[in-house]
Image 1 (cartoon, rainbow, N blue to C red):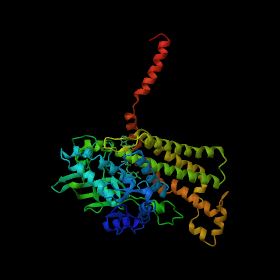
Image 2 (cartoon, rainbow, N blue to C red):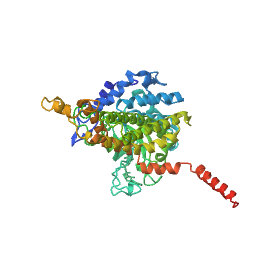
Image 3 (spheres, rainbow, N blue to C red):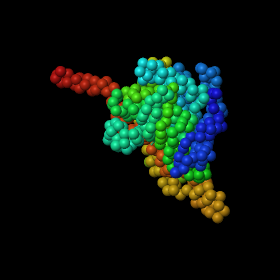
Image 4 (cartoon, rainbow, N blue to C red):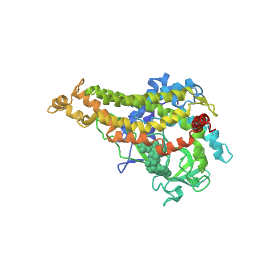
Length: 493
Ligand SMILES: Cc1cc2nc3c(=O)[nH]c(=O)nc-3n(C[C@H](O)[C@H](O)[C@H](O)COP(=O)(O)OP(=O)(O)OC[C@H]3O[C@@H](n4cnc5c(N)ncnc54)[C@H](O)[C@@H]3O)c2cc1C
């Protein structure tokens, strides 16, 4: 099949007819339902972009010879990484970086699982079945341009309990309840599927927050991929932040609200050929790092974050000029903070790509050190950028008449006049400030802030892992040597 068009993506999810629930109702058709249709159109726009810019977005499949999405590429050279970066950048620019789950995010992980497939052989009790499954799934997803959502975490319930089996209801978090000759049977719940219900398939990732290999956590430790319309699977979507307003009024929320869903499994049969890990906490804990999936995913994330920063910078400097605050020292100082964030992020990406090396699976893999630093830093910087928009926008983020006000013959001329800016007319200024509002204040904007803070994991635990994994010895030696020198000079050593 090769790379799909937007139309093919829409037809695909329409046909699947996934069981999605929202606002207390079962959705008949996500492609026409008001909560999903705009974001479905946006995802379709991404798929169309593959065909509008084939030289940037596609490559030739090593298997079929067809043109397939470049986000699936198994990079073999630095050139491949540069090309993949350009592809990620194109998709991110489509939404100003506001679609965190453009399909390239998960495509890179499926590539890493598929090419590092021998890793999964360990999970097969000596059999190569799981390794074959991972490789086959990569090929299937790439050749058919399958769109994916994923779930990683256990429901919150009681985080003080170390294992899921210690929860008051040990059958609440999704777990393997039975194994048959056909596959595993899964029951319970997993969180949190962004784009849930509007993709072709669901990948249930190995959760890295299981604790105790070989014991009570193993029934909760698995990885697999299944079609969204698998029997017993329900997507329980959160309230939509696309309020059905015009794209002028809600420039982001009316286009890119990706939705997030709780996933419910009721006697879901996962066929053996779709299982990558079965009952192994130890393997789940190591999958991301040892397949290098985390590195390839972070490469996509940092490309997206750079585009998002560029977009926010554009909004901020335009706002500054629009209301004539661009000469004030503290205002420029705040905008320059965003410029610094942008340059730092670009430097991290540059170093990661230029220090890339072939890994044990034959993939050209970016240097994780700068990517890891960037993914630990950006979630906090994103909150600061939002704060800067609010500090600089002030009442302009509330004095925001709607499209309907502007076109009303009574109040239109008034609002047009009253909202004019220094270098911009009222309608243009409100349009710009509505964009700033949708980034930083609306429900859509606040969800973005939460997303950026948490989507890659809890930043506190991530920073602890970063601290623990950082090679601190050279710096301690540096200080010891310095102090020893001083001691020698003082005749103590
Ligand atoms: C908008 C959004 C979209 C998301 N999309 C996806 C998705 O598509 N797929 C997916 O799988 N996941 C997704 N996630 C989930 C994301 O991976 C988690 O939010 C993240 O891993 C944190 O886990 P949690 O939300 O369960 O927070 P918790 O682990 O419950 O943490 C809540 C608070 O308690 C503290 N805390 C809890 N336990 C501990 C502990 N043991 N030690 C120290 N502190 C602790 C945390 O620091 C935090 O402050 C999404 C999240 C958001 C907000």
